[in-house]
Length: 241
Image 1 (cartoon, rainbow, N blue to C red):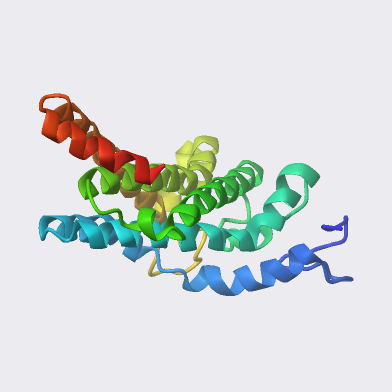
Image 2 (image 1 turned 180 degrees about the vertical axis):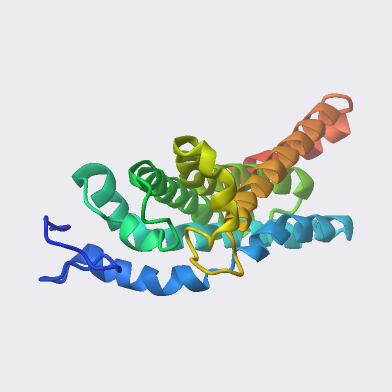
């Protein structure tokens, strides 16, 4: 059983019973306030620096392993996401939005949080299969194409799924956008990480993911111009999938 209509406290635990949703939410209630959003903004730039220093293999390995671990870690919210989407319970909202103002309707935001969980888990399974295969984790050739393809997938999907909860509440209350950006972050509920940081971080990921996709398309176009490049890039793409 996920939960019933019993009243819930701030961590999502029913006041008169202990539930699976409540137990996972207790864990998340400890993690969200200390979650470091700022490094997420810096990550794409750090990866580009590694590529510029001809350390593309390190970038490939990092993106692959980080994506697998980071995305699968969202499994801690899987039960709550199911509760939110399919049972109409408080689910993921009980712990994931500690900084959300008390006077706003968070239903749409909560549903988007659940979708975020589902998308991240699917991506985690995808990258875990690659990470667990030594020959695919960091293939021998075509590292630029491998990196660009994996980075495009991870940063676009990851950025969109992280951004949609904020976008949902912004569409609901456009007149309060500036207030939300100045206030404590909805997720972290701490003044040093205002809503603007949590709002911008996914956008940085999306832009970098699209940039990586553009780089991949350039490699593919170049491959069509010479037989050698075609063989090189053509051999790089299969390890990703």
